[in-house]
Length: 370
Image: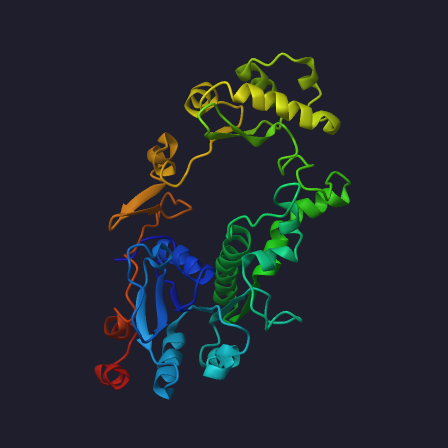
């Protein structure tokens, strides 16, 4: 039995990589019945395929007219379809929006690409850092010497998967009110640009410099940065507000009058060196005892082995273990209809017969696809 606020929502996911599976995971964790269409062949099903968790896999030969018709029969019953192919691929398969919306006028058809369905880059290959490069985001992140890719969190997952999930659910609300579905064009470059909204506002206000590590939130300010401790481990400090900054000075024992000039950018480099010297006098655990859980705005910088063991994460059960693999638990949390991990990552085709039968296919129709 599926559980979560999206229970009853039926979604067809065309298998992809990166942000597509992550979006499918989010929707499944909240209870949606996500059926993934995989191309026939071996693969997936490993417990370490975390973003593949919680849905059922139907393996089809998408070069077969019978398989395409099966897809169309599935979408007739679905609330949502989403795919992550280059523009034109679904049309060439015979599964483009015009065909699908004709079969099911209420469906929300999600299309996620790096560059979007239109524009001069729309047919070009790319990866996360390419998409965020054209938005200003990559330029703003890194050291003074060079931009640094922030993993693939900003483009793939933040600008892509999260905007896709948001767009799909907004489309479902509209479809239920009007009876009309629509296409949701999700470009990771668009999403990354949207994530930069505050910074474009700060630039317009004249309070954001184009230079990296020269601003309050990019490591330019001594009160918003990471610092190495005596044991070679790191802590993060984000004491922006004056009362939090005052507490930082109290907890570190700093009484240097120069630190009263918190927002004087001209002396930020000197203040950072002085603060770094103080932080290097104690270990990360010692600073955690002094500043952890206070209004300093403090957090130890943990690696992936340490993070699940942190007392706060343990208390909230932020991480869970499934089939021997430690992984993040479903988020966000709901008081009345909590989500849950609906099942392990499926092997390709593991649920072909069962899922098709649940979605109304007869035994004869299933046998014809075998």
